[in-house]
Image 1 (cartoon, rainbow, N blue to C red):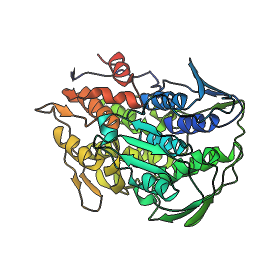
Image 2 (tube, one colour):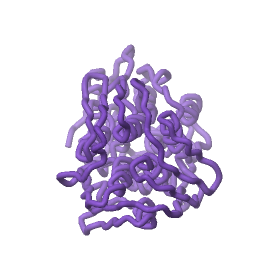
Image 3 (cartoon, rainbow, N blue to C red):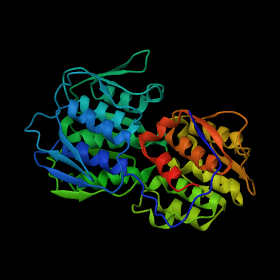
Length: 399
């Protein structure tokens, strides 16, 4: 628990976002399955989600080294994936958990996969059901831990991608190790499709011939051939938090220069140009919490396309509404997953400790609001999932 007093922020300093975990996790998972070596360059720190994925891949036999601004993956001499010697702790990373389950399903031995209390309480039935349809064994204990074993067999699976695109990304990323052809029937409206396109694009750059089209796709394994060097962008999905700091304090922290990937660019550009109206976050639901606050202190509006965020680190629709309430801001979540937000509001200091629900995006938004009005933040350590130094950087520019 930390106390953040009201403060003034100074301009003239460019905020440095951490490395994109979405890009990094995909690259290291694929590189671990190759017989080559790669140097992955990045600007900014690595979050715990990335670190935990690296640790998990090492348990499966990957050769990965971390140095300043670089993650190196070396050839594993055909030993990846191998049976882990201990349970794999993936921390708070839902992406990492799904990818790890798919990779573990390529082996006949049993792999134990766990995470923090938030992850162990979250739903994973789409990926576990798919792996079961491929002949794998996936069980979940009362504590939320997973026991996974394969090997997978050729088969057909149905994936409801209205709950998230990660299950299809997981099957595609693990396809070189799974070694089987998979026929996929896609159900529901695809959400977070740009992240799925990112997966397909990175896989294609390593030799994959798989394509995403229509409601029926085929996943075939391939020999992973990696480049000697790539550079991953920053975690652009955190840009709205920095924008919130700028608007609360009337400062310039360089948010206009922080978006260097296409994953959330249209939605961030909308927020930079508008402070009211209808915002569709179907393709970028991670922005919902800071975006809701930006509309509240702006002209107000409605956010749609975020019903599936109830499956995130926290039940993020509910926790977003609660966070705004804590700071004296109004928002109304409709049953269909739409948020209505009145405009022209001003945050007030909470009369109680602000909970973050083990959700790093909720926590950073809470810290941004607290920097203006003050607050005691509970569970702030969850920011480590993506941006461990966020609080330090915030205090460094405050007075």
